[in-house]
Length: 434
Image 1 (tube, rainbow, N blue to C red):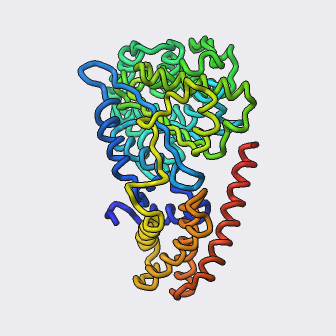
Image 2: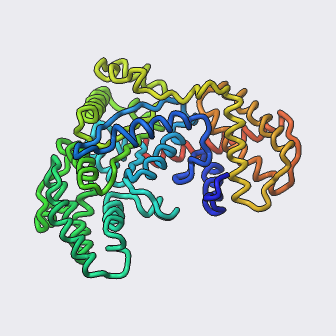
């Protein structure tokens, strides 16, 4: 286990796995198994090459589909890509699609969901949550460009440099929506000059939240965020970040965990399809410079949704799809055990009294992996079921001592975990209003 994994981070990882079987918001890379080659290819071909600006030219854009059944690694994959992007000064937006928060048939809500979730590389674990949102991101990026101008000891010369850059270079950055650019300028100037009212008004506008038009006009904001302007705002966000050199680029990570498209009406599905095509086409045409768009879906997306829209199906070819169901020729049972070994390592960092009887732990992990596989038959949720079951087993061993498990023991443990995960999933859906 790499030295940089500290006890507190390891503990957060274990708690996240125990409660939901899902990877943590920070630290997913410590658990990664089987997709390193795919992620390294995305990094080398896109984050380090195609998306990067070169000799004054914009970087390109690209779209990829991430395919796997529910609970089989889509969120884990996206979180790992997110961490790779942060390492290279990309900003990222991890968005869980839902009918209420981010319906694809509403460009304004899509932009709003991105604006509320986008973030620069967290400097501390606390920044993972506190640093979310376009306003927090812009503050962090400016503070890094002019080191400590907003967070450090007041420095008149540094403040003057930052104000001058915002009023000249940033204000002249070419983007599609001048209204969007004006709102960014007004927000940062408000923060630099201590005008909290101006900064707060601009922040509300940038986040896509309800606002009074009369108040916005007082700070020079006249453009309205609605269905017709939502994607223009999104393109302008990506354009401004790379062209101003505040960030290398943008990674948009969409996770359709709840089959939100299938819940739409036929008309809404058609609009959502057209909107997806718009994003894909604009990425390919360079209007979303430096933008990596990953959309995680279940296999049903291609069989039941994309087939109804030929133009979309044409953009779902083999070169655009990353299938996580079969990884690098690894047998599923071997993959499950490899995941369990990673969890054991993290558990050992999190707790000084973690169980360490290697032979018995190895046999128990094999037993639980076989039962998880038998109960799901490589279907929906196999890997998530294994993750939560093995964490619970390690917690039991820590409390009561390590003992050998029988297949019946493993089956009983897994059944209890499955009930917990089902309840967690039901609560999540209820919370989304679906």
